[in-house]
Length: 315
Image (tube, rainbow, N blue to C red; front, side):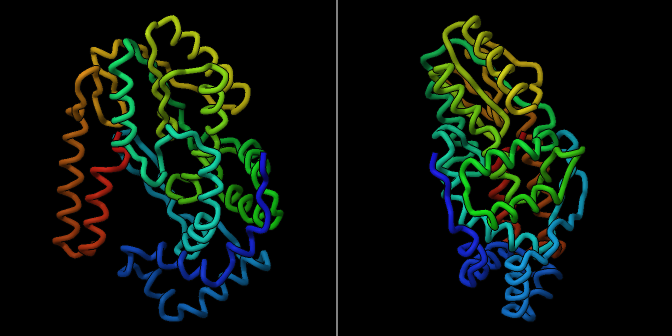
């Protein structure tokens, strides 16, 4: 496997940090953090760049809050400076991460998303009879730091780049040596990468004819329940032994009765939105409208949040 070098200098380049600032501040022009940073933009970017280059900048200031969407989640919001750094990293590393992913993993990737995932499963549902639905208990909280670092070392050779990534990983933990903060841009890519070896195992070793993943939500289709049970057992062994994760109870079912996946109900001949999803979408849209009319968010931010309601993972 190819290992990539000479990445750190690209990450800390002036042009890349300028682009990272623009991405991190998009839709947040009224934020006090952004306003303060912008008052001396060039100076602040230079100080940030030098802090990263000299390994003197401390990463990991988080503001935490709970959401119920529908289950309880703790969201960890990094400081604006940290978010600039995350964007600077992903600007350079995203193409490298992309090369590790199979085609049919759909979370946090350009040209993918929930709609594309649902279309693929619907297409395959026409030629299969049964489905297996899998997902992982407390996925972000359970990601093992040591294993994640090992996976990064497999694809990245640049030592300074690895040191920076490891600092971000170690800046947060749910329990000792485990957990990524929900809310970090880098967390999305790390979490996607963490299950990439499982994707290849399912396709290349188990020879599954239809498999799709959206972060830790997985759907496998086949002609018999027995085949799916054998696949489920193999996946359980792999996830437990190789990735130190725990699956929730698997769900087997007939495709004709509907596959519940990412807010959709997918059958052999139809795709509809689950009723509970419709209710939650209406509630979110009302909240966005209220925040906009009360001046809490800009028109641009309202449009961005509206788009997220319709296009992001909503269950």
